[in-house]
Image (cartoon, rainbow, N blue to C red; front, side):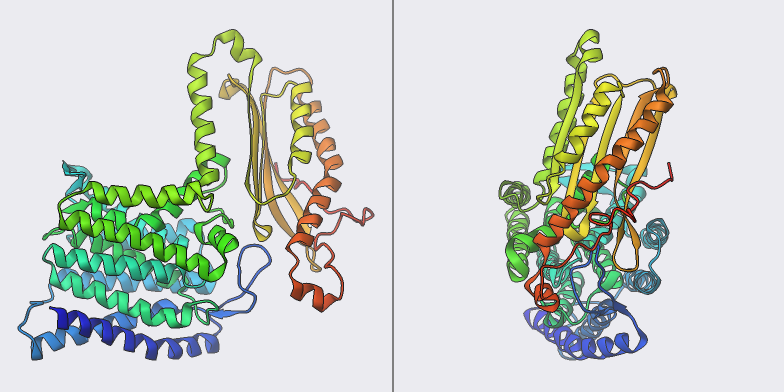
Amino acid sequence: MIWLTLVSLLCSVLAATILVPVVRFLARRVGMVDAPDEERKLHREPIALCGGVAVFGSLLVGFVCTVLYDRSFGDFALGYVSARWYGLVLAAFAILVVGLIDDAWVMRGRQKLLLQILIISALVGSGTVVEKIGLMGFEIYLGSLAFPVTVLWLLVAVNALNLIDGADGVATTAGCFISLGLAVLSWEYGTPLGCIFAFCLAGSLIGFLFFNKPPATIFLGDAGSMVIGLLVGVLSVWGSVKGSTLLASAPVAILAVPLFDSAAAIARRWLTGRSIYATDRAHLHHLLQKKYGHFGMLFIVAGLCSLTTVLAIASARYAMPWLALLGVVLAGTFLVVTRSFGHAECQLLMMKASHMTRSFFITPRQSSLEKNHRCLPLQGSGDWNLIWEPLVDFAQIHDLAKISIDLNLSWLHEGYHASWSDVRMPDRDKQLQIKWPIVITVGSKQMTVNIGTLHVVASVASPRIHEQIADLSLRLMDLEPQIQLIIAELERQHATPADVRVSGVVPAPRYAGAERRAEPAPLLSSRH
């Protein structure tokens, strides 16, 4: 078996080193490149996409070569390739096609999610079903929930790897460690074919990492990250025990790092009122890269994946499931305590829980007088309190039920959320709600960018409520110059030496309106 693992790693690594340059050349020729932008992406030059095609191709080459080697020179230790493996390859190919379409034409989030659900449902319907969950030595039979739970798990795995793929080498590094961990677990649980398949996946990612490490010359793209997510998600089910009936704590722990990022993104967007499909620069790789640099980020990701993987394998080897949980807790604690990632999301959760708990113990008289007030810089150093405090004063004077602001200036690594509200809100049928998108004009082409949302709730019984809303619009217009000055200062702080050398001076703000009041940039859209 050791010879087979060596053959699988060697063949897949060699296949990747040959296929990646070919795919990179073809991607550039057909225009499949990831162009930089001023809002979210970190690279400065167009980078070839379609890395997932090379990874998937080298995986298949390594797997086929290993199976043929076993049948020709081995003792048939891998046995026959059952129909479920062909189903997995077909599902992975379908996900790859969806990812390539998204890379080329950018699909809407709900469209991509629907196609993922259809592909995964077909795969689950072919027999890959989690029939029971085993955590910390306890087993829970799912019964009729087996199908939706399996679909949900695979969706989480697919999108967890997709979300973490936002900086050079991150998803590839995490995928390498996850695949190696699942390979060892499959070996431990007596599934040799799953072990070899996982080693082939790890080998293809190792070969791809030579071209994807900073500075990357090719990206996985959505096609690659989603394929890796699907494969590791299925292997985590198949590698638990024979028959793929148990989703154990060890495979879940191995996936802890990308799952952290997904959970934090969902919590951050839900608690701040953003769309689940919103983009920002508050993901794990963004914050680690800003704090530790390119290679420091990869070192942290590799170290955390190693920690969770080693303890997960030890938990399976010695039948001590608490070791897998310990690895997850240690990795999460490191990120939160060092304020590398997850600290802002924890604060949002604690404030939400505190307000909910307080609402159960406050008297009716207190609820009519006291207010819930939270103010949290999610990211960056901008002094957004200068904008928020006048809005709170306005809400108090005009007796509004709630006012909140959520800012997301992703190209400046800035995020800010604040909320002021009554403890007891008016009934929904007696509320007047208005959401203003906060829009600024960017660049020489005068493109508009939405930097956040203002949410106002008032009671319809309030006197002169419509006049108050009109007054609020005037107040926001008065605050517009202050917003432009904050952005201009942040632009100066983020100016690189290369920018200064090119222009000869400190770069001017890219946002019109801070100094040219004759042509003010529209702060508020007219769409209510």
